[in-house]
Image (cartoon, rainbow, N blue to C red; front, side, top):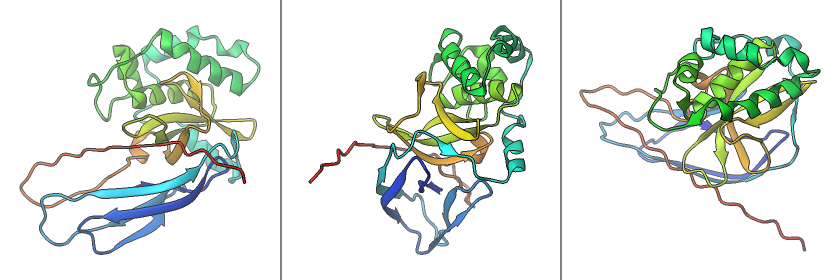
Length: 242
């Protein structure tokens, strides 16, 4: 499980984690810098729950400065199995005529703003490991698909792009969006809602695609089926000045 952490955009001021049935758990960081919570339950059990409650100050900045070693951005330029450009996306990429634009930020904006014309939000039509090409061919999908499609098009322009999982005000579940590296800064784009990422968003994890950013991942031993449910509540707290 990933936990929100401090970035240039946000500051975690309080965080309380309760894992039912897990006597001991630890925190570490993965190769993308995400804060990860892990543990195990040895005793037989039929269910377990994780409750996380906290406060995050958002809108600290409008972007995140790129400070890593320059070659580390290469991984976010490379297509993955989920973002690879197929015939349909390649044709659409060419139709956008992005080479006519001057900067990477302008290209990212055009990609985001073009998607509502060719792709519609619809639950239940794509799978959890759906590729960008398949989703685009269907013309329908959820936030994960919007993000994969935009990342695919950005990487086709050799623009580093990373998949973001987090929360936003009013959402009933986790949400996915995109960050693109433009002129030394990571800028947030939400193609699902066709808007720039602002103080209504809380970032939890980032990676090359959704496979790197599962909110909860685990395994069990036993003869049983498993299911998972998730509920997210984000409320805005107005700061008062003394």
